[in-house]
Image (tube, rainbow over all chains, first blue to last red; front, side):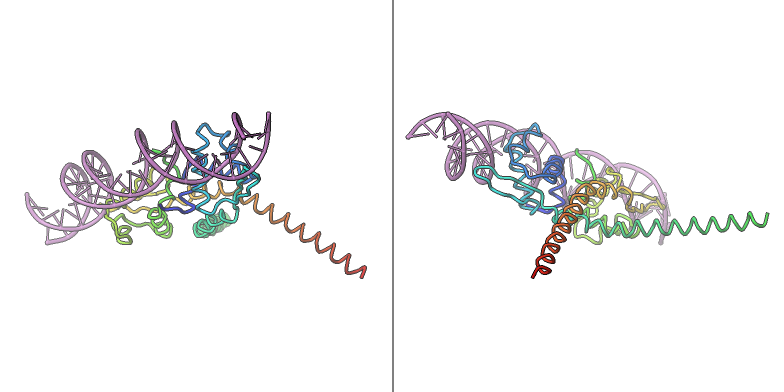
Length: 112
Length: 112
DNA sequence: AAATTGCACAACCAATTAATTGCATTATAT
DNA sequence: ATATAATGCAATTAATTGGTTGTGCAATTT
């Protein structure tokens, strides 16, 4: 059982669940109403998300309200950060290339 | 065959490959040297990444240089944006709560 | 107290995955 | 021309996944 956040968000149903409970806490039944699978299947997804520490849960009588643990989501952002660094860097490089080209053009124009 | 970027990054080996070729273009053999699996296994991962449009490739003789298509990586960032919006919002809420508390305290202090 | 509701867990099953081994193909070196 | 190197593709296999149905348990409702 690999069980990390990247595997958690690999499944489209789980991503949809994450989207739902990011906004407000919901019970498994309420979540299941948004999909055309069984409540048990949703329960399984919730267990996986839970094992990845992506869920906060609050028991209220026989109902359990699940909500997204937003802090855990930041781990994805942290992984992405290294690539963001690269693409912003490339963008800057492109920028300076364009600037150089523009200067060249300006020089040529001024000599015409 | 689901084949989206989230499924692509679910596999730890693929994430490692992505990390490698983000910096510089590499051939399958060169990539495979970083792992203790067969070259064919890496080739398969590359195909999956390619099907997700995560790769740029450049043929040089019999070698193929693969590099990461950074723009595609931004799709993950775009998906994350909705949650970022929420967590920044929560942070602001917390901020204002703290501010309110502080004001209350100040008031109390001033009355003492 | 009995029926119902909300939930988790277990057993099972089909589909998918990631890996391996064994080719085939094209480009380079001898 | 022939051997070798770099790569992709196909078949096979074991493990994992995502789903289903069935069961049990605790909290409500009647």
